[in-house]
Image 1 (cartoon, rainbow, N blue to C red):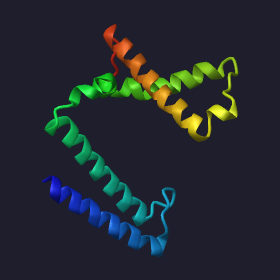
Image 2: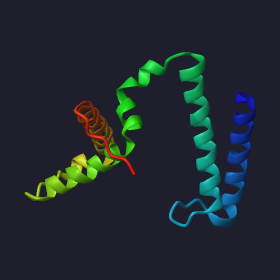
Image 3: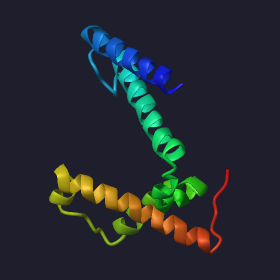
Length: 130
């Protein structure tokens, strides 16, 4: 099955790059090339995670993000609460923390903080459901 998925990802990549000559690659315009390339990337990521977690038995490497999976809605909403709280006193981060490599690192750390907050709230019984 892994081989089949990788072949499919390869075909999606080839067709995606071919179709960009007609429509370009644009997320905002939802071009076929964008869809095909994102689908290929998703399949490769799935195969990689499957290989690492199920075949190599390294699922414990991802234990630190389990709260995001168990309490997804809460984890999704935490950044909105954080931004709202920071807007009350008018706190704004400097431009250097919002762009470039430092901005990416800040975003990654903020995402981990949101997961940690979700885990803490889950431990005290906070859970959101639809």
